[in-house]
Image (cartoon, rainbow, N blue to C red):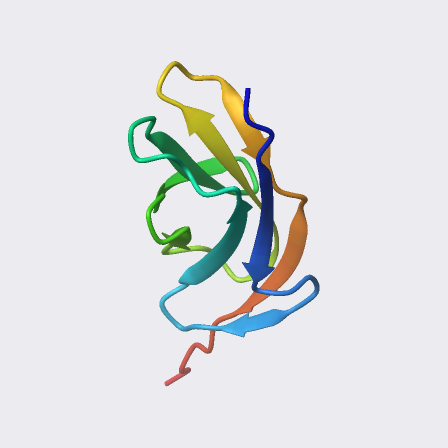
Length: 101
């Protein structure tokens, strides 16, 4: 079995993200690369909610997230459902500006 190492490279822990649409974009690092003949899926967890990611680019995006503090982590999962790798948890703060009229 291959021992994968998965980590979140962006955003950094304790980072404030400013996005009025509530989008959080996450970039991951994975070693070694996923073999093309054995595809796996990458998922982003924002608090308890799961979002699909692009396993080829290791990029994830969640949208319509409420403002405030959020816990982010990613998981690489085989087609059979086995967790191959998990990143550490990163805490970020989402700031959404609301115009008051």
